[in-house]
Length: 222
Image (cartoon, rainbow, N blue to C red):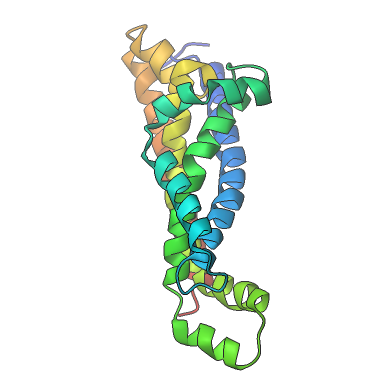
């Protein structure tokens, strides 16, 4: 269906692409949050002075995080083709892009989680230890609740980065708004298609930022 002020825009295709982008962002966001939380806790707890200090574990985890944070996403997709084929059995489609998106984003969010945990007042931790709290009690009753605002704020930033990653993945066959903007817009010289896809991406980003800021304010008891 082509109509109106944007004559080259097929709105049914645009709706489908929007759904694919939201699907990739939601699923990768869930796994990124879980894996990033694990990585962040591992970094914080095993660092020097941490509750489970293990320098070799910290160095290994930190190296993993630094390496995958540093690789440009478009190169990471290529590097992870064998893993993607092993897991998804294909390189085409929204689901096939998920492993690369998650592996690219989880280390980034993991570092943000570590930073959020380091912002927790050490006096609160020491007080909990003095009251006889176990290390696990300190983690889920002190560290996590106290760092929720920072974690949610960091997840908001990460979700916005994921939108950009889905757009890049779309260029090489993952579908979504990135694919529409490049294939049906840029390559076909249909500037209105690229413009509409860009506007939709911006709207999604603004919504994520707004919701993330609201949730951060709600959980921030300081």
